[in-house]
Length: 541
Image (cartoon, rainbow, N blue to C red; front, side, top):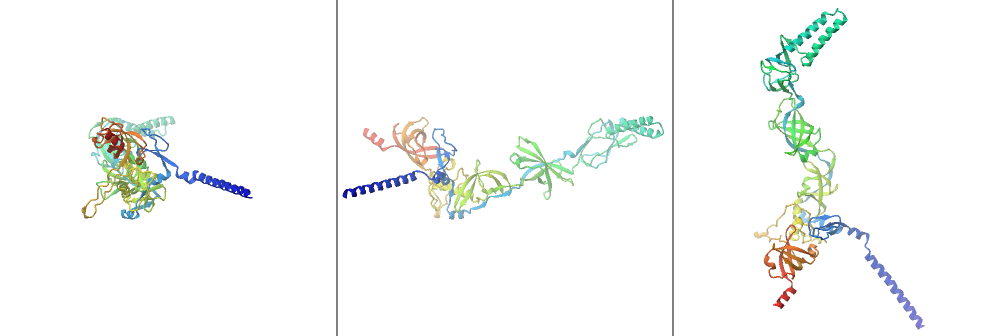
């Protein structure tokens, strides 16, 4: 009985141990296998430069020194992209935001131009026959002439002879009305030949007055040029008058190269002339010239303007306001929301109260107050339109002072890049490539200024002094520097003082401190042999 009891007890203990092992193994396996959410959280977004330079890559790569780019995961991206400012400080800054919406971007483009003659309304008086100017009826430049008005009377032997032949042929045709058909037909051809001759000279309807023929104006206009003189002889094709109709004129405007994409034929224009400050003229773009002026980088457009009172004179300077815009609705934001650093355009998206995210955007057409956004944000998102520069400045001061907000923020897993590639030691978030606007600490009461807080941050490291170079720099093989996410490698550093390495032997183990003095420029501010090296040197001494 006792033996049977022992066997049953042993069997129960073995079963319990097996069940515990199964439960432990299952639990351990569950902990080792990542969930779907964990995989999503740890998704690699891109790879960043290991030296902290503002350079990223969608695939793994190495830099010029052979260092691997560091992977940035989704959680780290969220931590580095947002800007957190206390609600109280947001209210003090006067932050305002506006939702992105679809709207028509109809704007006005202001350009300069000049009044010119409508080339389609100019003509010249150049007789096609030889003759002499017997009498001038229009004898001054600038004189207004009307259609059909006599310009001058000329004598031409050829013209007189042709008109007399036509007259005689007409009389002969009338006298031979009872003659046979062949005779009448011959006289008819003679009369038609004389008429054709006069028609080819453009004087088919002219009438002789004695031995003179009168030349008439074809259209109403202003005499721009008069070369005819009393008694002068002229040859066929010689220009005697140039006349222009100024009832409509052109305004030729110069449009900058970067604006020509907004131009459209038929767009309305408003013309202002300095001579008439109280009066404006309406016009319409009727031609866009096909070539660009390489010297001024401008394109000419032609504006057709009515000028019934002849107020607009050729060669006058004009200021034109062109209505531009395609008329269709596009996603647009206020122009005040854009922070332009010169190389990129950034807007601050309001994620929540006191939380903002900088977004790189690509801009399109502009109106007076709004600008088209091609990508970077979506419809309905709130963008900061007022105090955005102050928010940007505030976030950079946080990086310099170690945090200005009253509300503490958790440290991100990866320090964000500051302007110039330096990383923020405080762990506060800051935008990439922010503008040059910066704030300064306010003085405290009593007139005493706050201490200078923008002191460069030093980073401690261990390594080996390899060489002292001829240019005054030192070559150091250093251990990994976690604060900068640098792996172990050999680098050259400048010294703030050459005496720092004066008493240290080459090959010695050292501890040193480095500070970023400029963009990507690191200098050694402190350098000394480690305790082991020092003790060894003292023992030898």
